[in-house]
Image 1: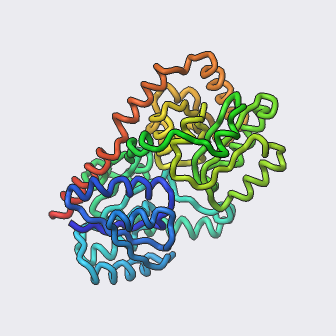
Image 2: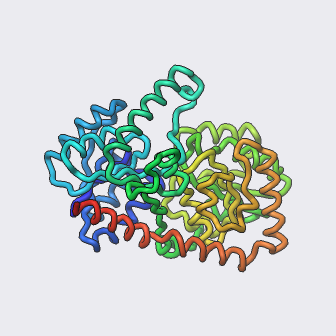
Image 3: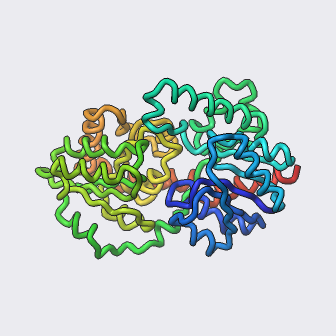
Length: 383
């Protein structure tokens, strides 16, 4: 069976990492993936090629009809049993092309909502145009998609809320999966700058995520500063890169926190950071599920996160008491102080972290996710 999967770019993101981990399991089920993406040169692209995955490219378009024409041409030139788009909010044109060729079409929804750049959100005209654009995609997707998959319950609500057909088999929940063997298999030895940086730390905070508005890095720095890290000897490690990297780095310097904050950049071996972290801090404004929260719990790192519904799904219920409003710095500081105190007093110890580890292992394995995807592909591909 051949499945064409549409993504943006094969960079180090939750979607791309998870899909890469699924490849060997799908291969066992005789499912061959072809990746169709907008841009070349993603950090994971070579790993996909090494796994035997064909990669084809097409141009980014803001017009659904152009999306339909491009995909139509690709599908006419190669035989595919199923098409799976990872663009949860903008897949209408792809749905149209698949309908025209009678090819089963799947849409995955990976986020609570569509991310619009601030200038769009602050302009009534641009906001209205964006909404009309999304509404068109939504109508086409609902009409022509064979299956719509939400990778959290909250994500799926974009299409099911208020929909009289929400209970139909058109909609399905499949939680993201984590390849825990990769976390456990990475070298625990650091011997690098990060280890030296936190050698004298009384509490090491860790954040992993791209430097974009949804990850809320500026809020993160404000909360960290409010805890008086210089006096308390707190250290913060930031793993990732992105469009706001330089802005965040400048803010750290202006706040006089450069001796307390370590910028690790992009690093696929996150195990070494999780092993030296005392606390994982994740103040996202919105998320799809929060894969790194799952990874942190597997590595027995206590988590303090924004109180988003997907975060409630991704974390053990014990940690919900440390959830906060990602727009309220004082609330974030209070929850951080609470969890730090409970870590020091050993109220958060082996028993709590083991329960959290068991929770994620029972619900978010890559084997389960890949198995569910394989079942969907074979079910709708055989119709």
